[in-house]
Amino acid sequence: MTLRRRTTAVGDLPSPSQPYCRPTGIRPSPSQPFRRPTGIRLGQRRRPTVTRTTCGRRQATQAARAAVGAPKRGNATTNSNAELIGRAYRAFAAGDIPAVLQLLDARITWHVPGRSPLSGDYHGPDGVLKFFGLCQELSGGTLKVPADEILADGERVVVLSTVSAERHGQSWSSPEVHVWRIVDGKAVEFREFQADQEAEDAFWSS
Image (cartoon, rainbow, N blue to C red; front, top):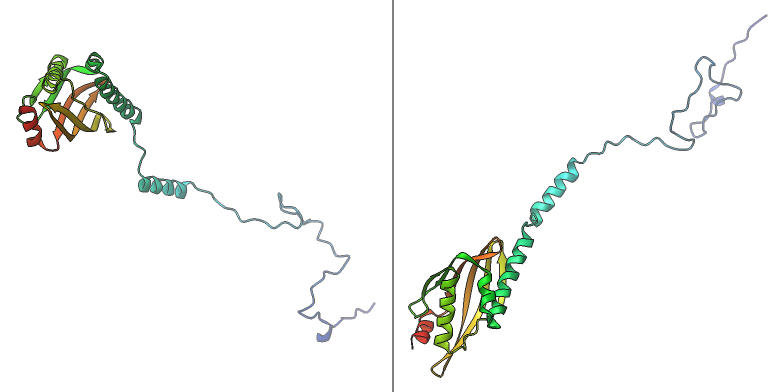
């Protein structure tokens, strides 16, 4: 039997533009069967493996919190202190002095600046009651101390007030700033700041 070597001319080779087709009837070797990768369906591309991390998200969250500012704590206490002082001013306007005294701590210090008959330091609810009595006596019961605005931050409460009164036929009105300190639901300190101390001293001393 004579074996003939078959030669292929260059013109018989497939053109690069023509797709290569495997000759029919040729199968992989039985010893090395073709195995499709698990988890991949026909016509589906393998997706690259992505490792997720929370580091970047955590850093972004921290940066956002730093830019906005951490939420303040103690808002419930701040609101309750502001409400307590608001009740005190409403009670005073209604002439309910006992209700005002109930909101004061037994160790409260009450400071009024200036050189008028009202100036000085008063201690305890009894001292504050004495101050109230002197105010009503000098004003003939015309003293008004409304809470125009209440600002609170923690244990500090600031009240903006326009105080007015009448005395010897003269009317007087002036803005004041009242600074309170609240501890455990009771007022422990009061300080008054007057817009025009000389004018206020002159009015109460006349």
